[in-house]
Image 1 (cartoon, rainbow, N blue to C red):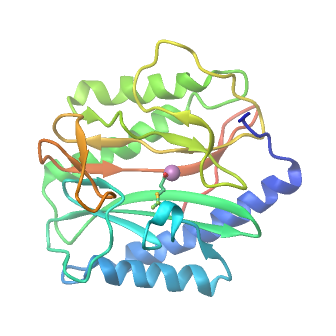
Image 2 (image 1 turned 180 degrees about the horizontal axis):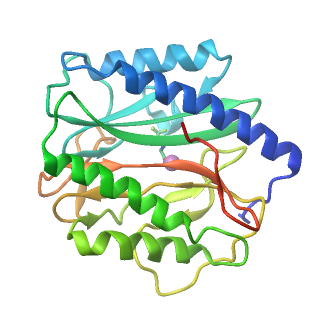
Length: 250
Ligand code: MF3
Ligand code: CO
């Protein structure tokens, strides 16, 4: 499928979808406490999304059973919320959420510390976030898609962290996952040319140890092979002729 270029009307709908999602993330971030279950986070997130008159796009997506992906410590992404998984002081928790507003999808993820966390965990979270910003410096019309991938890789490499290769970012719009796929590691080809009006979900997933990941028995939860902790940072962005617009920022 070709990469879609959104019209001005569609861009407005994307902006609103993403703005609403940002309010959900902000509320969830403020609510995180030790002692809370990952189920509690999903329940709060789904309620917030529905209160906005929107639909959680992850729910039932390829059979995913919840609205928010809640991934703790060595879980990379797609953690399934559980009443039994209780957040402890010192944990890191990645929240990945999305919604549909009048047919338009938004998608964003953040990793938060639970209470006081170690300096190592803080650094992993910070480097993951900054790798996103390094990547999107290259995200403008006329550049190529893999300029983003290469910039993320170049930023992360000196820290010695593992960049997850088995999962990628993606185009987004009337579908949660549209073309193109957006790798977070160095590419040999330049990839397609970026054009104003593309909307992309750029989402580095970075492991403190090695890059390898595996799927758990539940067929969803992705964990690091070496048990090291992992962070995730994602925004939906709009490509323009100048700086990209970060649509899900808060
Ligand atoms: N946010 C995820 C992504 O970027 C989607 C979660 S998969 C789902 O691809 F099944 F949980 F929806
Ligand atoms: Co995504």
